Image (tube, rainbow, N blue to C red; front, side, top):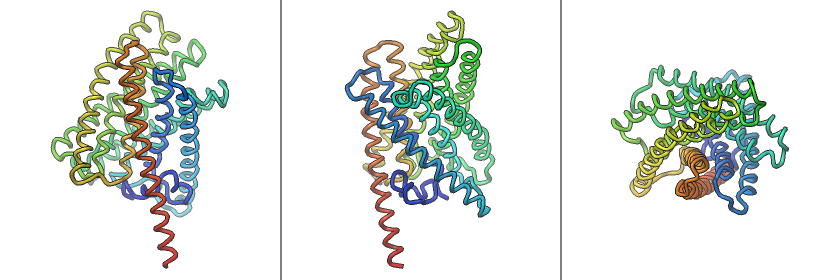
Amino acid sequence: MRADSDWYMAPAAAILIGVRVAPNWFTAAMGTGILANAAMLLPLDAPGLRAFALATWLVAVLLLARLAGAALEQWRRDRRAGRPAAPRELASAPFWGAPPMAIMTIATGTLLIGRDVLGEQLALSLALTLWGVGTLGGLAAAIAVPRWLLSHPQRRLDTVFATWLLPVVPPLVSATTGAALAAHAPAGTARLVLLLTCCVLFGVSVLASTAMAVLILRRLAAHGPGPARMVPTLFIALGPLGQSVTAACLLAAAAPGALPASLARSGATLALVFGLPVFALAMAWLALAATATLRTAAGPGLPFAATWWSFIFPIGTCVTGCSELASRTGAAPLTWIAAALFALLLGAWLTVASATARHAVGRHISRRAAVAAA
């Protein structure tokens, strides 16, 4: 199974048609969920923004539920047929980090937005459950997938792409969602344990992402970004950068209810000391990735592929990270940057979602025509 196989049928129309579900399909739920979360965290009071976030979150929930149901049914069929559940190709394996990240992105949205329709207690319980499932799945991916990738007999430097970051980022998403949950946890031991757990997840993921980023930079220096369809994956490097800024700020926000006042104040300072330069690095990488993408589009062309969804979630993490920095500092320029990044995110999501739907419908029509002709 190639990394882009079946993707021309995904996600919206294809999941209703009944083709095989690959783990990279969950990036559509990740992207849709982060769009809703980013709208809620914007430091703006724009009319209709909360309603937009709610509608988008509901779409993400339905998409995740349908994908999860289809994946479970497929797993049952594969098990009965004796087929392996996990892909054996280097290109496909990193995407096993996508399902847990999709689950935890929806968990964050449930906490931020879902309470409007579910009520405070039900939303909190559901978010905690999703966080637990996503955290366990993310830890499994973060341990097993990189080990498998680095020991694969076909591994060479030119086979390394930014997609290799996907399995090591889920613990960072866990830290972000867990930090948001910590603010709602009972004061005392429960909140402290949750906060410290999130700090550990944050540190582990940042270190693993840094190590993987070094490998990816070596590959770029030696071999360039690779085929045109892989150029959008350069945006994936924004994910750990923007997500780490968001996590650091949310952990600092949760600290006063769990740690002594002096440590909480230090945490708030560390969040800014860490967050501001990392966000600046993210903006520099965004400029580099955008330049490479535009150059490719103007030259050999940028054919539609699964990798187009690489634009969405990483940009979304930059929106949430900038929004949290703006909220903590009160700096108007950061608010304007967050708004501009959100506009970019929305435009990218609309472009990718519409292209995905067109290819899904076109592929479905072609298949029906082929069946009829046969």
